[in-house]
Length: 212
Image (cartoon, rainbow, N blue to C red; front, side, top):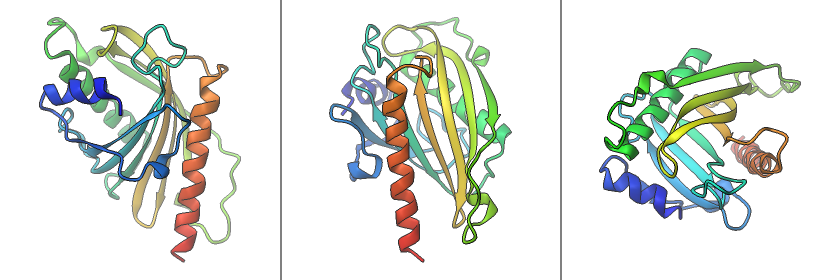
């Protein structure tokens, strides 16, 4: 369990965090920590999304010198509203990261302008075809993105995060999967992030198929 992450937030009295009850739901390589967060989190109560977030942190998550510093993957399993438009995704992610930064820093940078945090999203054309037994909304919407913010845990310095995001709807539920890293997408950590994502999507598909 990523104690520095959980403890920092609990000390701020902002987040109810729990040990992952079913680690296999978001499997990861050995050494990756895992947590589950209730949404909206205490540090970002203005978020409109309601549900749960399953997270996996790379071993170097809180080690600035590590190649896996601040690298993690997470799945949001959400209620059906609001719709996952690009504008909503961008707005909710910014609320999440602004709230997280504010809670963790807890006034350590008094003049920090949270409104200066930005998230740029680029929609990626998917080659995935919708099968005959799927609805159009089941096909994931894909984005790449860049978040400029202040990393509040280890460095308290500006950081640029690269994101890959998938959103989809199934059985009146909203889903999001995101891979996050300050490393460029040609580095080794992305292979691990993608493996976590692909395993989750495979298990998700198997779970949904079993319900039919």
